[in-house]
Length: 229
Image (cartoon, rainbow, N blue to C red; front, side, top):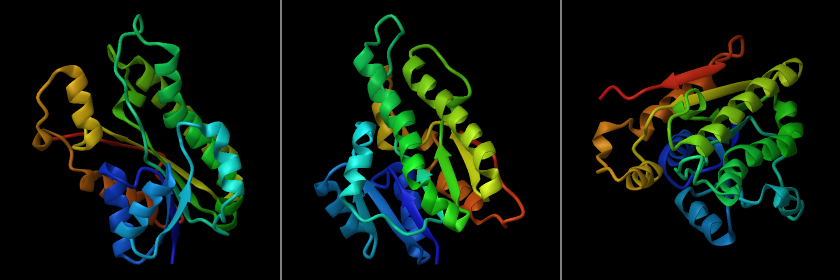
């Protein structure tokens, strides 16, 4: 039975992945930003373990984990949580930059660092759910795209560094996906949100599970998923 640590399991792609893995009997360790959120996730996924740590404060993750019990081994670490705040470069403040860089880039790097010993034991798999913005930046997406371009660099470096230890590293680049985050983006853009126009989170979850379940003689490095509508 595989054990997976998931960020962002509360909604969108993260919730779809967590549900699919839970339904097939895998063990889940779900990261929550606070104790209240951890209680909600534990109730939603009976039998799942929770860890409390705020991705917005990556400098405190090590301290937070030192007061909790980490799993002895992990088969996968799934970085799915993310935040977005649009704005032109001329208007973005350092607070806005830090908010997105902390959650989208620095926290995944720190979580990976803290959990590498457990991943090496199992020759596990690290999956970074990136974004189309991690490949192409557009106007008003500067801070978010920068965090996601950095996430690609993190994944590429980790893949080369940990190859000898048997780790697999995959980046997934979804296009616009129907989720609470996408609803927020449309609000910031001043556009009407129609979820039927965008990728179903379940479709992205299918691609992530495909990468996880691939036989050990192969590895998916980069996987782009785009809406058909």
